[in-house]
Length: 420
Ligand SMILES: *Cc1c(COP(=O)(O)O)cnc(C)c1O
Ligand SMILES: [Zn+2]
Image (cartoon, rainbow, N blue to C red; front, side, top):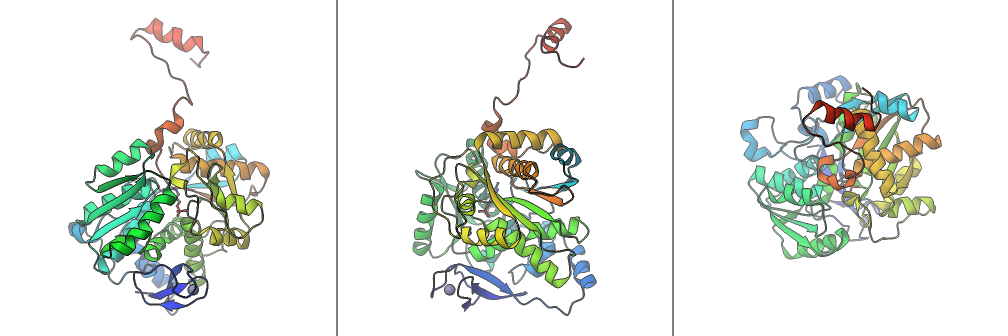
């Protein structure tokens, strides 16, 4: 494996590849460090990737695993539920609507449990297996719960999934179905996360994917960048618009592009990174607007529950990335989120959950303000599925109910002046 250890993001203290997530010296977060062989030529690297399976394990050279799972479906009990290789769709109708030239939708709802969380969980769970854990656990805003429960089922591991008790019913049902231990906590995600941090000290044989395994888990998000570059013919787009909850996805997508640019696998330059938050939970966008480099925690109140983290772990790194990439971090309110969901659906045929509404509405806002140049190539990162947050679109359109008779149809349709 190319991973050599963990490094503190603050004081750069080195650690081994252990189940550890904070620095002993300064309490900074730890990140996986690699020593990638720069002698391999670019064509050889690209050939290795293209010869790999149609999932994230084609990028195993850049992931922190000793023995990456193989491609064979027959070894499912050892390899788990593979994620990735989701469509990158050219969205010309959306681009026309926004006055832009080149817009792509990376539809990560097309994963096994319908969100990008399958990527991070696949990597976190595979690493947890290597480290000898047999229980998988998480603190979730919804989609992570789905992904952990499903991945544990595929691997034959026991799982404990802790969620805030007010989650969307669709997400609760789509978690419980996998036979996990589903625990609804009366409180916000930040309360759930605090509880899990405490629990991870108590339950030493549990791999909390986003607590004690977090450095490994977070690396899974880089595969989104690798895929975008590969799908664009080894090219890095000019601009990315990406949602922010903890800030992990946003910062890791940038890390993925930086790694491939440094190795010459992808061509171009580091993209401008725009982050998107829901106004009702916008600690990072708030800090950005005030020119601060740390976030003040907030109490979430938004329909974008999957992004409702009031105290984002990677907030300062997200702010730093927005600054050094020439990007921004914006927020949109609940009505704009609903409109964003409808805009994406009506112009691309992709139905996204509230987080995707946040991202799409943010792109629309940036295009309108002229923050995004009409000639830039833009990738909109759509992270989750609309069927999981149906309430967000309830009553946003009309329909007719008629008798099964021609006159009834004509009456109903003509009364609203619809096209005949
Ligand atoms: C978890 C999640 C995100 C963002 O996650 P980060 O914590 O910022 O990595 C974005 N969209 C959806 C749908 C999610 O479930
Ligand atoms: Zn440190």
